[in-house]
Image (cartoon, rainbow, N blue to C red; front, side, top):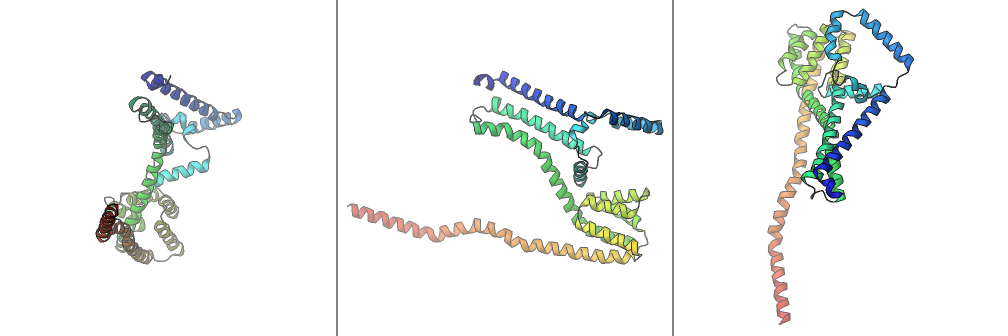
Length: 326
């Protein structure tokens, strides 16, 4: 039986069994998700029909390509059912730089696909390629579970790294962007024009910050309230400097103070903060080098200082043992 499992036919049987189990789980989840109150379903269909009648036929044709996507039928299975969890997941994807409408759904589908591929790879490794290596129960469990876990949790780690990298880029480029914005405002441009000009100038150096400024400029141009758009930018970036900047601009617009003076003071504060951040990193450098210094300097020094004494003691003990034996 064990030889059959380790053979090609055993691999095919196990892979087919795993695929059937996963298919049954997906179908059960979909059936559970589709359980809707008939009255609610009827009400929703009536509202949807009335909405389609009010819309322009050309607009309906433009939306057809987006409605019939491959993952649309699995939306309830791939997306969180709780509205708060769905909003948090969308916010996380936006902070990572993925602004698409279906980013959460695509991310969940990617996790599911990579997990299934991990299961297939684990069976291939354990039962076909390296059966001797994964002979023990512990190694077999590691070989079966590790690829699946890597495939499922790997995308999450990737999103976390993307969020941190995006925040670091925004923090690094924000003081320069403020200086450019102050120059534009002093030259006579409005704040909205300054934001759009700065977004074009810093795009090559800081694309994440330029993308946020471009979004703000386009939304304000579309007619939205500037304070609301700026607060949404602060929420998307999740950076304390951006939140403070938005607070300064909103207060300056509310109380009628000079926007140029507010930008000048805040820009000076951001330059000082960047200098303090650089000094903090410089002060941490000796502490980080201490471990390396101790690891690569102290052992050779001990060998040089204590080595001859140890050799002399060992030779004396050896010669004394020989003398006593004679």
